[in-house]
Image 1 (tube, rainbow, N blue to C red):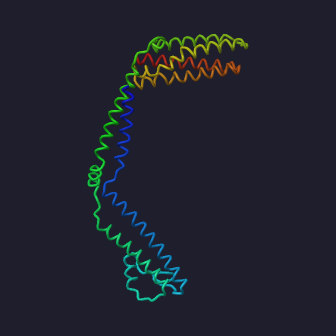
Image 2: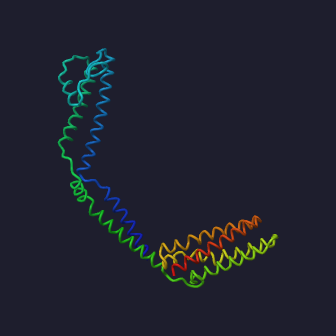
Length: 287
């Protein structure tokens, strides 16, 4: 029950922090809108200028006002607009209409640039205060829910990890380790005495190995949470590093027995016995 409540709080907290954290202050939103309008106005100026130059060429007006090989009217939109306003050149109706549209687009861009230049740039603290006034409360509420939900889920995990086992799973890690190590050592000793193994010998060794793998070894490898609760993360790593290596060697020995590769099976069993011995030494160092 507590875990479900914790997960619910986590989900709500993530939604609140994401929703309110992404809110923009009015000043930042206005600045973004202004930037977007300037970009659109500049695109409109470029389009009207290109259309104006094409119209001049089609109407036989030649180059002028920055079109073709004529000199540029200025480096800024405001300077270009002043030159166009002061121009006394007489054009036909189509060219005049195209120039008027170009001039109106320039005026729109210049007005936006002047309005943007009059706005003061906010400092980091001012932007933070403005954002907090809009979404800070909801963001903090979501952040607190994340903390509470994470704490509740962690408590449930810890209580589950340290919960005492029952039945066969209650056997101590050391007891299971002794059982597995003894069984593997006995199997290895028996295999060393067989100089000319038969198919029946391989099948018998494979059966004994499977019995070890599905019983004591499986329970030993599944005791990770209890080992972590008792010895901590470093202790668990010290034990399960050689234990995992030994498990892989036993799996390799089983595959070698299936393939009737006796030397590889004997070698893998011997290496697994050494890994299990290292696991015992690591356990003794922790106790």
